[in-house]
Image: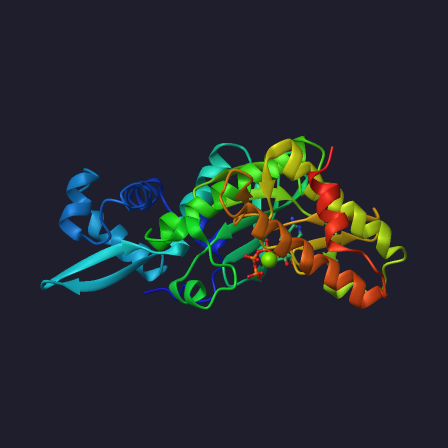
Amino acid sequence: MPSFRGLTLPEKTSLITPLGYKILRYLADNVKRREWFTYEEISRENNCIKCSEIINLLYDLRLIDKEEILGKDSFRLNFSGLIVVSLKELYARGIIERAGSVIGTGKESIVMHGETKSGEKVVIKSHVLRKSSFRNSRKYRSYAIGRDMISASIMGASIEAKALEMVGLAGGHVPKFYGGSRNSIVMQFIDGRELYKVKDKIQDPEEVFWQIAGTLRIAFKEVGLIHGDLSEYNVMYSMEEGKAYVIDWPQAKSVKERDYDVYLSKDIKKLVNFFNKNYKLAIEEEEVIEYIKGD
Ligand SMILES: Nc1ncnc2c1ncn2[C@@H]1O[C@H](COP(=O)(O)OP(=O)(O)OP(=O)(O)O)[C@@H](O)[C@H]1O
Ligand SMILES: [Mg+2]
């Protein structure tokens, strides 16, 4: 068996034949109905004779998990497999031309470099919710309760996609949204760094603060959304543009939710604390909330 250790997900994606892709897609489409499938079931439902060879390859590439259940080898899609399906779909729909190295693997996502057909730099963010990240998560997410992890990740991606698209169209400073598939979304690559990393380099912190508040106001007034996990980790600042982008929206809350005020206050408190503490400012939470909600 060749060693597939160390291959990136885009490299694995390029090794998948149409039949391998068909099987992965079959498993992805049925994830809500069932988790585990035997060789026989996968072969029968995909009309293939030599399926076992391909299933073994998918397992060797660690795109599916294997376990013996009731004496029979059984397989299920894992997150790498789901990401491969989403990358194939993003290529097929012409949303990306290339997927490259990983920028970062977070607790709840894998972020990769990518490029569109016309050469624009993008990132591909694949949502990967894990049980452990749930339990300890400060980002407790109501949409994920009671759903399997794969479906919950797909739901997170779809909330983030909608938020990026709508807040961006309304004029907020968020990465431009290009499209999505399953648990992956494609957005503009921001040539900047997280706010907490550049805090000593910002010339006019008060201006940056109100820029961020402006995006939150647009999200609130024009789109009806609250970020829900705002912090200095989820704002990227581009020195070149002098622009602060609000990122990481999968836990966005609707203003129609019962406790929306609680989420809004939490977001504002974090942001105000960061700016007041680091730059000796005296911004008041109430004044910011009034600005975000006001006419
Ligand atoms: N559009 C972008 N352009 C450039 N880098 C990005 C972009 N989106 C995300 N990143 C990078 O990936 C990191 C993680 O992204 P994000 O905050 O959206 O996901 P996350 O699920 O919160 O991950 P983590 O668990 O690491 O916080 C960011 O801190 C940033 O370094
Ligand atoms: Mg984040």
